[in-house]
Length: 125
Image 1 (cartoon, rainbow, N blue to C red):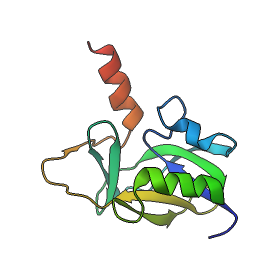
Image 2 (cartoon, one colour):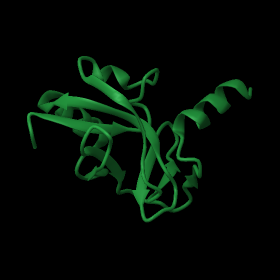
Image 3 (cartoon, rainbow, N blue to C red):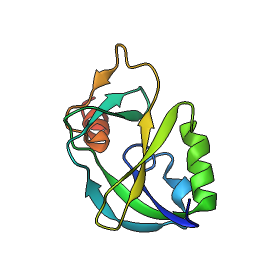
């Protein structure tokens, strides 16, 4: 892996979410929407993305260093709970974390927008 890599985040690592602090010091490149090749699953307190779907996933791209990647790998349980794959973005290729766990009885988030689901829940009470 290069000393400076890019990562695409779509859940609790996004701005305003609980794990965003792990990206302190990383360079925000911009918002990005993937090609329609994925499926987003609701895993409770966070989402998981898997391949072989038809949804576009909305997220953010950051330029990170090896320290950031080590923290993200630890959070994501890489390589056991999640695997990584490089995807194209306007800023170059970026790592996306893909869920490897059990998919049975997991609700699908068809929009591919975790923030939309969370915001809807916050205001629907």
